[in-house]
Length: 290
Image (cartoon, rainbow, N blue to C red):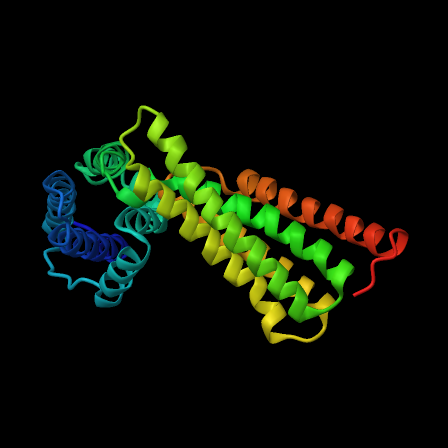
């Protein structure tokens, strides 16, 4: 089939995307310890390479993969998990799907490619099994509790104590004790449930997440002198953590971002605001002076 320059340019772009994703899936597959995950990624890689060859039949040109994209998504997958990396990459290809549809009736194999790029790949990706996503509930438990409880505690302590050193000390003791308590509770909870999750790992995910959040929220009180500025910085960090975590979950598990973000942010800020008022009541009406 003869093609004009505009169509050739479009098909060459498709070729580059397909061969780039082929190399990304190949690289990810080599790192898989699970044979099942490795086979799934290799199957997707084969599909990508076949799509590349289909487009190549029309352009009659060889296209090199995008080395930067390969390195970028490989790095993202190493840092945040292969499921997140793959989902993020597929999100970036949504525009390509729309362009494919314009070729319906022009390039014979377009409908087949659209089907395999869409439903077929999504089905395969859903079969991937990644440990960190199996323990998302444990991470959410530790993160949400730490954000709600500690932002509230720090807000109340800020107005009640008005001393960054004392606030940091009190917050640290409260946070570390709560992290250990949450870890132990998650262990007992998981052990009592009929689940494939390991109770020890679940407790470690919960406790470690809680402790990491505690450190980040208390950090301003260790670095700054103005306690009101410290509280503002802590709330900013809390909102940033909520946004990043919910973005991660929205990509990796394909869940809505906005509703989950507003829910978590609203709880944290609401509890912090109420605790701030409690601190004011304690200091003014009960005559507490440190």
